[in-house]
Image (cartoon, rainbow, N blue to C red; front, top):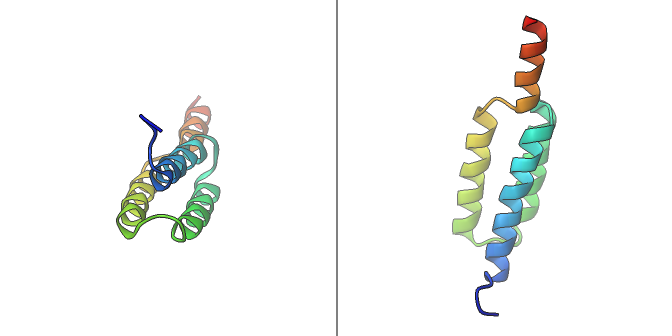
Length: 78
């Protein structure tokens, strides 16, 4: 298992990737709902420290505009 991350680190990274993917392809409300679902499930398998990091990561992503919203603004301004 040389070079492999421990299982909960793999899950932590996968959660971050799911949040990133949702951010790219969803409207804001849907994205927030997905984040809440990811956090709900992650709370059962991550360490407390990892969960707090993931919650902070999700919070920062929620503050950013989604590419979906940005594309809508561009289309409305044309």
